[in-house]
Length: 129
Image (cartoon, rainbow, N blue to C red; front, side, top):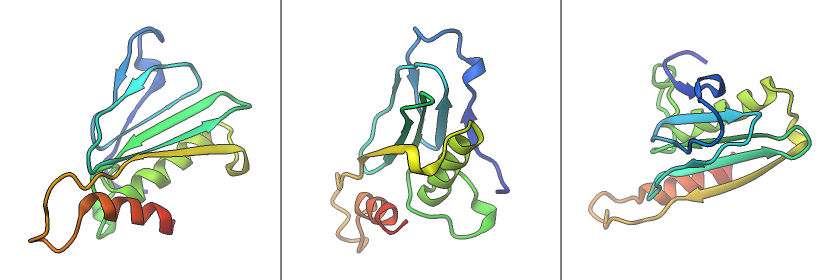
C-alpha cells in the first residue's frame, strides 16, 4: 500500500479517559479500551472487534473507491477498509474471529442532478467486498 494515510497511533493517546474524535479520512486501531466518536452523514465507518484479544478498530471514509494507486488514502472506502483489516491482523487478530459493524451511508442531500447518491455508493462498495 503506497501513498499517504493517517493512522492514529494508540501510543500517542494520554490514557483511556480522553475521548477520541475520529476525523474523516482516518483510521484508529487499539488494543486498549478507548471511547471513539465521529459524525457521519453520507460517510461510512467500519468497526472491527476481536473479542478474544480485545482489539478494536474504526475507520471513517468519505467516498467508495480510489481510482488509482496514487490515491491510496483512508478517505476512500476500499483502501480504508483494507487498511483497517491489515492493522488488525498486524496486532494478532485473524479474520475468522472478527466482528464487524457498519454505520453511516445516509443519502442526506438531494443529489438527483448528479445521478448518484454518495451514501448509497459507500454502502454498496462494502456489500461487494
